[in-house]
Amino acid sequence: MLKKIDHLGFAVHSIDKARFFYETVLGLTCDGEETVDSQRVRIAFYRIGEIHLELLEPTDRESPVAKFLEKNGEGIHHIAYATDDIPAQLNRAAEAGARLINENPVQGAGGKLVAFLHPKSSNGVLTEFCQKIEKDNP
Ligand code: ZN
Image 1: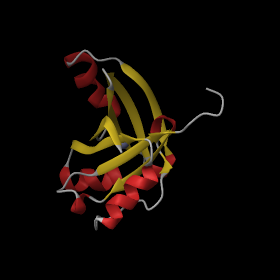
Image 2 (image 1 turned 120 degrees about the vertical axis):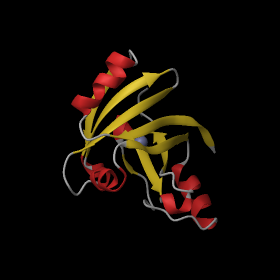
Image 3 (image 1 turned 30 degrees about the horizontal axis):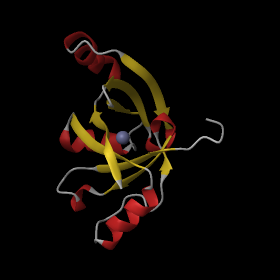
């Protein structure tokens, strides 16, 4: 079951240039930065209430975000829904005929597991499921 919107991802050419808008124009504070090798992106996080914004900067030309930027320019890249059971969400989506980008969850940012649905199956919106990894010793 989906719990809430976890975050929105924005594709940017440069986090260092984009942070002016989020920090100076909007007055938000950067909550951390991370490089996710599996997605070939550098990410800066901004928390707003229960959700956060992810600025996504490609780390190389083969990055899916680099391809997105080439095709669409900067803008909203994806929406992520929090769930406590990614495999169940993927099964549900697959059974309904949706195209999966990830058939199994992969390691994402913020220590979460993530999986994406293809935007052709979701009316043009790249859709992510994300799940906090349960810690053995909370
Ligand atoms: Zn995301």
